Length: 164
Image (cartoon, rainbow, N blue to C red; front, side):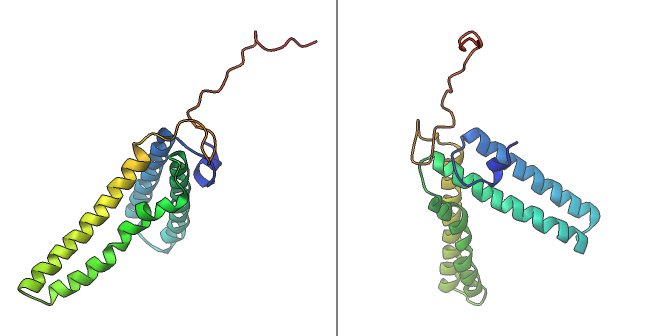
């Protein structure tokens, strides 16, 4: 595989390459988890796992950017898909703290707001999955480059000019 696929932030990729990259990330994370369970989570494992996780993180950003480029969206769309669902955790934690120390209507309101935060995070995650993983990219050339699914003309030996 081309390293530019995983670490380059320019260009476009189709849904198949996006899904393949997600599968590779899943297998790498699963392997790392199993290795940690087998060897124990000591200092040597952490010295190995941190760079691998950092590489997976940067690569997932690059893959997401290129997939958004195929949908003719800028990289700023990673914010609602990757970061905003995590930001819903902060108010949820505050509401959990309020719910733990209260009773009655305030407790029910806090529990409702916790659920609302989790539903919002889930909705953004599903939206990002559908946007990047299931919807087709723009057909033809867009501002981020040529269509990755465009048919390239094939030259045959018979059609090639004769060499003299």
